[in-house]
Length: 66
Image 1 (cartoon, one colour):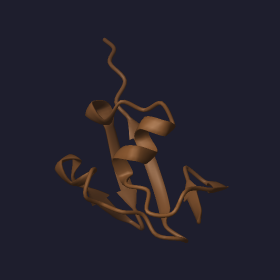
Image 2 (cartoon, one colour; image 1 turned 90 degrees about the vertical axis):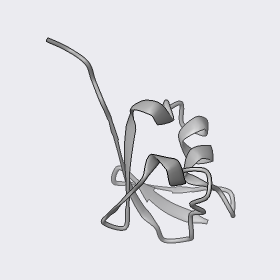
Image 3 (cartoon, rainbow, N blue to C red; image 1 turned 45 degrees about the vertical axis):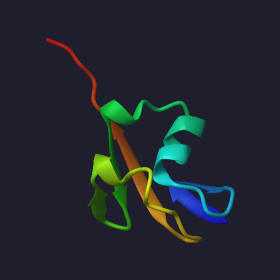
Image 4 (cartoon, helix red, strand yellow; image 1 turned 90 degrees about the horizontal axis):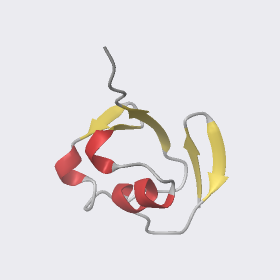
């Protein structure tokens, strides 16, 4: 299925969850905010949220600093 992640279109496995997408792309789910089709996906729902063809995702990773 085709998804757009941070403005980049790509092909992904059917039935992929948000958590699986994050793991496969090397993101730590504990420090990432995920927006799917304009709505924030709660971190507690990453495992249960299945992605669908055409979804548009924005992944924002927290960066510490001072």
